[in-house]
Image 1 (tube, rainbow, N blue to C red):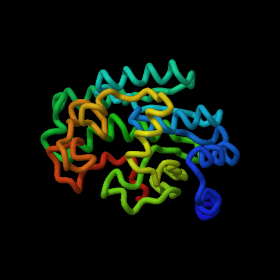
Image 2: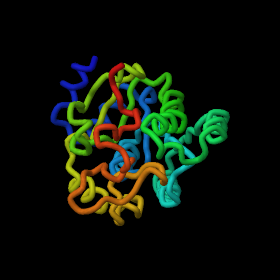
Image 3: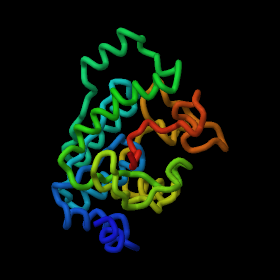
Length: 232
């Protein structure tokens, strides 16, 4: 099926990829948004295509106030339901009781533990039962993602992933965003190209890698939380 989808969407514009997903999968597709600029573009396209795909976000409990701002503006503009998935309460209570609120700074293992509790486990619940997972991933976003493809099988979660903006440049995203009046996180105008949890995200300096502001205290090769690991 992966090869068939790749063939079918080759050369299509992002909006036509969204329409293809709607035609082939309808409500069996799900879109994950963190309210970054790419995800905001995809949300706009879903609304334009009158997609029946479900939309969800991972509410980690550590988001920036600006993220809640754009979340609310997105609801107001598009009138699309966005389901929030929270971490398991007991897991968060046990983590903070045992290690405190900032254990993720102490080691990669601790950070991955926090990411698992706040993001990975809720993600498993969010995409369970769906056939297709739509994302806002672009190929140029991270060196760690350079081997990804516009369509791929996520073996970890047993779901097909489709990235409609995969070949878009940052300039194309920003131009589309502004020309269509799409609400976006004001932190993007303050040097935050990639926005995650507040304690784990900083602005980047000119010339730094796109994701340098995420988990900045770690080695570059380790800077993924595990949401988009496609092989077991």
